[in-house]
Length: 186
Image (tube, rainbow, N blue to C red; front, side):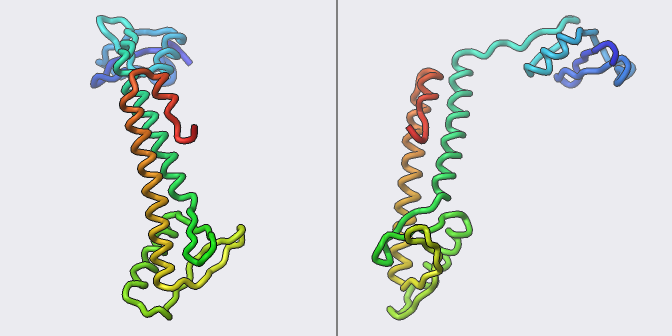
């Protein structure tokens, strides 16, 4: 490796090396130390101005707050999405059973719900569910499928409402510390 070199190209700093990747002809550039090169790699936003390497401006308190809000909202969304696909309970069969809620499970329930519309009381369709951790493919009547779906919607809606409430708290927060205290599980 040779001398580290920095150049501004289209508003972005680009790095070269005198041995490994020489500067193309006609490109304005400056020589920089290995330490400066490492700093630039560690913290984006460096520029070259008036022939000197210039560090990025420190973010304002408002920018730090907005960034923390975005990151926390993203984390809360991920936690909500994970909770939604973690499964739910229904007593549609007369006793508590667990049902899957991954996207395929949701699609299967929706398909069963559509098929159950207008069916006679003798009609059944099987759904995967578990009682005491033993998963089985059990028949469900049209009214039982409808109850499972109502329980699913209640479960999902409660999680979405929790998510909305927590996002509201994050957006109302006035400090990064306050934002970080808003967690899915507290």
